[in-house]
Length: 221
Image (cartoon, rainbow, N blue to C red; front, side, top):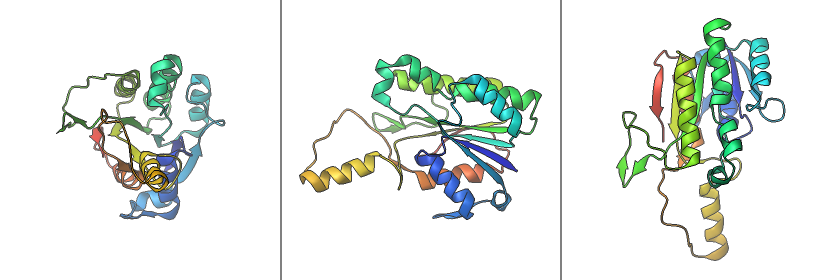
C-alpha cells in the first residue's frame, strides 16, 4: 500500500506520520496492513495544494492507494479578510484532482478529506445527519471542500473534527496553559464553543478507517 499524507508538518499530519512509522499510537497498534505501507509525506514547498497542475502531476507520478489530506488554511479569522487564499486552500484543491485520478487513472485510490466543524450549537451535539449551515468564510470553504470530495471521489472518507491540540506546534491547549502560567488568571472570549480534540486520537481513528470500506462522512472529536 502507498499512502500520501499532505500537510505532513502540521499537527495532525505529524502525528499520522509518527504512528505510521512506529506502528502504533498511544491508544494501541495501527492496522497491520499499514505497518509495511510506503508513506510519502509532503507539505509546502514541495507540494502546494493550491496549484492544481502540481498536485495533478504529483499524483500521476506516485499513483497512491490512499491520500490523507491534512493540508488546510487554519487561520479562522484570516479567512474573513483573505477570502481568495482561504478558498484556494480549501480541500477542493487537491481533492477535485485526486477524485478524477480515482475514476480514470489510479482506480484504487481512496481519499480522506480533513475538515473542521463546530461540533455543538447552543450546547447541542451535531451528528453527521445535521444539515450544515456555515456562518463564516472559514466554514464555507470547508463545506465546499466536502462537496468536491463527494462529487469527484466515490471512495472517500470525510472526517470532521475541531480544535486540534497535540505535542507539536501552536494550539489552544498550549496557549491556555502558557497564559495561566504567565498571568495567573485567564481572560478569554465567551462567544466561541468547541471540542478540543487530541491529534493522537484523531490520527488513530483515521488510520483505523484507512483499511475499511466504510466510506462516507464521520465526526471525530
